[in-house]
Image (cartoon, rainbow, N blue to C red; front, side, top):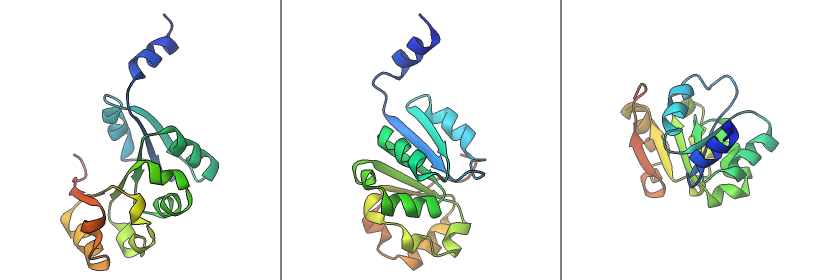
Length: 143
């Protein structure tokens, strides 16, 4: 059996997750991708090309958007397939100071992860009803 057949057998039946971010912002992701690969079939997409981004989203069951930034805004607002996916966004910090939270289409998001409580507090001041729209969790950096 060659390597391709082994990979296909290992991935059979696994949910597919696309881990996505803009190029140059993926520094936190290798450990996360490695961990997710134990449970999911994982594809990474570190791109600004909407065609590549759309293909990754079409392929997956779950979209993991690293950073609540321009990519999260464009994908939640412009890609119709997002309504059919489980969507997770991870917010670090700088994003909350740039009015990005108000630009996300929250009806297309299932889970919002924050890296710390004080960043969560800032976003909830901006969008008080957010806890009614998405599941919110704190997952500190380094975990």
